[in-house]
Amino acid sequence: MTKAITNKQRPGSGTSRIQTQNRQRIITAALEVFSTYGYRGSTVAQIADSASMSKANLLYYFPTKKEIYLSVLEETLSEWLQPLTQINPEGDPADEIWAYVKAKLALSKSNPKASRLFANEVLQGAPMIGNFLRTELRELVSAKCIVIQQWIDQGKLTTVSPMHLIFFIWAATQHYADFSAQTQCLTDDTENLFDDAEHTLKTLIFNGLVPQ
Amino acid sequence: MTKAITNKQRPGSGTSRIQTQNRQRIITAALEVFSTYGYRGSTVAQIADSASMSKANLLYYFPTKKEIYLSVLEETLSEWLQPLTQINPEGDPADEIWAYVKAKLALSKSNPKASRLFANEVLQGAPMIGNFLRTELRELVSAKCIVIQQWIDQGKLTTVSPMHLIFFIWAATQHYADFSAQTQCLTDDTENLFDDAEHTLKTLIFNGLVPQ
DNA sequence: TCGCAGCTTGACCAACTGGTCAACGGTATG
DNA sequence: CATACCGTTGACCAGTTGGTCAAGCTGCGA
Image 1: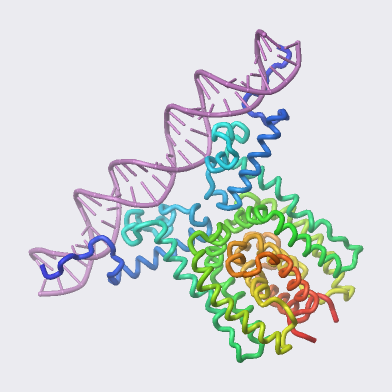
Image 2: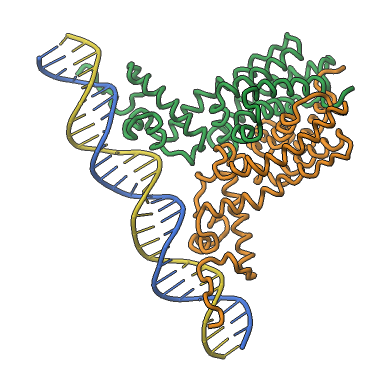
């Protein structure tokens, strides 16, 4: 009678060894499936399969499909946005921007599934993370735009829209993760894909396309 | 007895007024739905609803969901790739590239659903158009890469990988269609979104990011 | 070693999926 | 204005979906 009510239903508060282990297994499997088929195109049976676990057991840890999805998103979001927070207003503008580009490109190479997960979500209208985009992400991006604008005002960067510069960096780097099915089809030298991309991107960003 | 067998089942070969009209209505509705939810995330009932038509009637015109999907893809593909074919080897390199960028950006603005349709398809591994990518698209892109490489060899463009330059243009232009849910959330001035994008892209491509 | 809370699952359910079909409504042609 | 084909649909079907549940199994502290 000491423990009044043991929360039998949701293992949420508990932190047993088996729990944390299985949760991670589910998150990994869910990232695999959701990043490939999007939310609506994925099934919990698929995820359970991919996690080598019965569907019923999976739903013991995450009560609904939506809850799995949100957990994967949350787990992945911070990693994905971290490079942007790293931009240092005190650093050299060109170095900082380039470090950001390289970091994003490295993420696209090391964790393309995370990129595809967001791509699917946003492509379908960001029904789950719309609010996050409108508040937290917007605040972060706005802050970085101010930094970039200051660099422009100091004459250290050419006059561009900071917001659109960020969009271009996102587009150019995530392209290799999101559309890898396409880039793989069109490229011979898939071995050095990311190195070639980095080199071309560097030339474009720092020299432009036309010789002076 | 004159007409031996009237092909009652497939109205494919027929071209009656009602047929062409309804086919177009279905294609339009299907683009709407497929571009939003992807192939697996869409249902024929949704498409029928969007076309203001009973599900049974829709399946009278297109026998399977897959066939609808393929028809929409085919209908949209040619329009989407047309600008690339327009690049003229005899023209001025900078003009030709910039005309291509502008054309792609205009398409992203005028027909973002087409862009999202392909984005969904490729994002999910291009299960339906993989073969097209590996053959026809690859051939087209290879031909244009040769043109760009010649321009580079003539010293009219800086030394970049033509393939990755094309990837960069695709990424930068389609980003505004595919991720509009995001760009809309982050931008204040959505009115001039595409004009600002065009201006920033022009500066980036032709001047680079760092003042000389 | 025992007991029990927590872990696991097969069987099940209602809602939904893509697709079929017989029957009914419209329309162009003679 | 008849009639033969085209167009349209509600009712239906088997398979799949997200989710439930009672019952069995397991790991772990006493």
